[in-house]
Length: 113
Length: 119
Image (cartoon, rainbow over all chains, first blue to last red; front, side, top):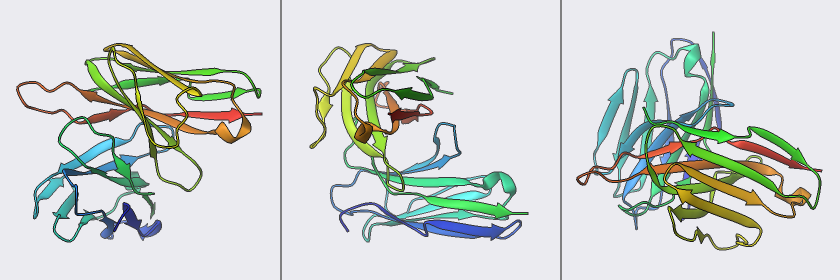
């Protein structure tokens, strides 16, 4: 994998259902994996930064896992609510200094009431 | 929490003119600022990295004479698109990295972006 890939591109989920989506990234030259939640006309909101293989982080109903050996991360949303509708971005950070991020195209999530 | 204010949010300019986009860190010192660009249905692409008081480092394929970056203070960075052309129409967004404090790194904080349309 050379680039950061996210799937699916878009997702419609019924309110109350749980969902998950994937981020694949180059496992070489890797320092950290970032997840952001981005609503239109707002700043991307940082959700998680993960560095260690097997890392699992949770923030309310949202959680994420990281596999650095195979180069993928999953984001899970439990009991989706309308306010979860947003674009979810993942980004790979190559070094431990102040490095720019390599982003995927995002997963556009729409929660249907 | 850390906030980065980016202005303007939208700008329309004529071909050949220059446009300046500002990013200010409101409650922290941004030692490093990143500028990204996003074309429709594409990912955010890093354009350049700037450290306060130093010249910016541009990514391959980004013209430094066209996209002028100034990071003269720890709270302000500007991106000027010079002699803009329709192909420069895009979404531009900045991101600030806080300085490390005793080894702790505070992550990246993004502005809300600027939609540039060149007519």
